[in-house]
Amino acid sequence: MHDLLRIWRRVEAMPVTAGVELQWRELLGDDLHLLKSFLSPEQRLATSYPCPHPVHDGCPRRVVHHGPEDIVAVCGNAAPQCDPLHLKRGDLVIYSLKRPEWIAAITAALREANGLAEADLETPEGVVALGVLARRGKLLPTVWMRDGELDVDTLARALRSRVDGDGLIVLLPPGIRRWTDRTQPDGIVLLAPPESDDGDLALWRALDFIDPSYRQTRIGEPLAIFDEVTLELATVFGERHVVRINGHELGGFQKSDVKFMRLLYLAAARAADPDVEGGGWLKKTKLQDDDKNHETEAVRFELEKGHHPDLSAQELKALIKTSPKKDKTVRLAVRPERIRFDESLARLEFVGEQQTQPTSGKRRRTPGAKQLAENLRQGREVAEQLLAAARKLGVPAPARGRG
Image 1 (cartoon, rainbow, N blue to C red):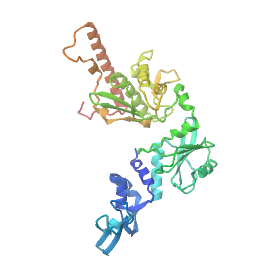
Image 2 (cartoon, one colour; image 1 turned 120 degrees about the vertical axis):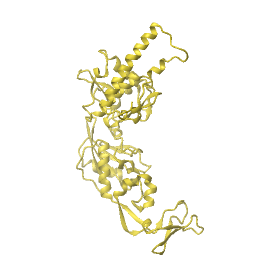
Image 3 (tube, rainbow, N blue to C red; image 1 turned 30 degrees about the vertical axis):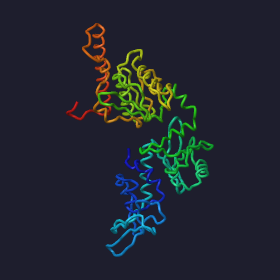
Image 4 (cartoon, rainbow, N blue to C red; image 1 turned 135 degrees about the vertical axis):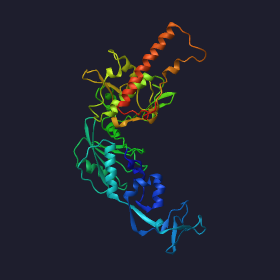
């Protein structure tokens, strides 16, 4: 993730784009260094200074110059609410945001984070062309309205009349709570920015507005991509495996090493191939599946029974697609950049065998126990091979010399 995306919403939500260093630091904290190259010192000095409790009429504190080296910020209230603060001249330097450079950097970062193609769009003051979204067979020019005082609806209609494509996505300014997602005629969709710090604008929301039937049709469409799904895979050392979809942990896979490793390998193959529409396919034989696809179906079933607040059981099951080419390949129907491998996977430990350990005493040596032990051995061997294959594709692995 581009570091600037951690701070762009906070910066854009500021009512003004100039202040002393303390004001910028109060806004960004330890992330201030990310913005330093986009701040320019002004010649004038501040005549007021931030107050620790800005709730009174006399806030913020007034700056009084008793001499070149004797500068004090004092409370403006008749009954002072805070003590005088001695300052240096450097404390009063006003830093302004270098607007063109900032907008160019954020635009490039948002375009990359959201898979937008560059577009040559002429936009009025206060509106930034982000690019073109090409998904689900549609082309949607996408703009960002930075100025919250603009007549958004009128301006959106004017822009739509000047651009080609299947509609227009208008990203509304961050930090203004009155904004909600809504539509206008002719394929115009206005989106409130998500409250996340990874730069993901969740542009799939616009696609859902334009084609509400897509959610259902994608279940049976073998080439469909679930572009709103983020998949995270992790492990709790020695306890369970973790599968999260859009932040929600599914109940399945926790104790099944082989099923989790098959999903992990599918995710690794998908994440390693940047071709969103055509890539990520994996031969079933590499998943060590049989001719009747029993193992792939077992992973699908584990997804299906996972229970998710925003995805139906059918949608969860359909996250694993079989190629229509009949070439015995499958893939995870998720965008590669929306797959996360937690660093805990470097310390992954198989947990399936723990379920078979006796609670007390020794396990009886019966024919059934012998067969169970053999099945466990074979399952562990398959899990080890799948894990090794996934790590070759980028899944976190132990540091050299460990594990």
